[in-house]
Image (cartoon, rainbow, N blue to C red):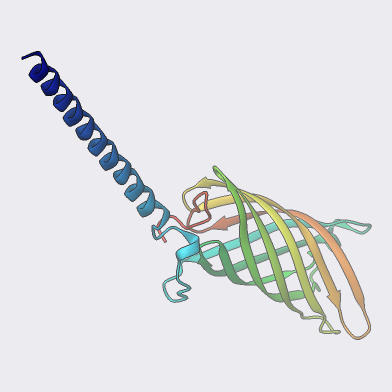
Length: 199
């Protein structure tokens, strides 16, 4: 009789352990499936498709940037506005602006590629490479390399600080200018992985 009781206890113990293992495996599988769905969601920038037609529009404007070096403030302040489309971590756009505040200022048109490099909460770091044309007598080539820190202060509004370099060159002239400024970005908010929310 004692042997039967011990066998019954061993069987019950085995059944309980099997049930616990099954429940644990089920919970683990659920966690893995949830993680898989999140990591492969439409917001995952590494799995997104480059679709120009479906990409959301953004606007980036620099109302104030100032060149370093000597000169009147009117000659050293530049402004521009950029419009384009966002492809998760990449913004592709066209920028139009002016290189000074004088009435006879030189206007420029530039193509830009901006990449969202890193994100931490509402803050992000961006890098921009651009190339364009200055509408001056020399028809100067304009190249840009810019680094920015932006804070997403509202779902579709970000404000940031920017610093970078403009290189101007033509057949007879050559100049490099370093600038610092502030800018605004209007567009969809990015996740910590750089993917667009609501895109």
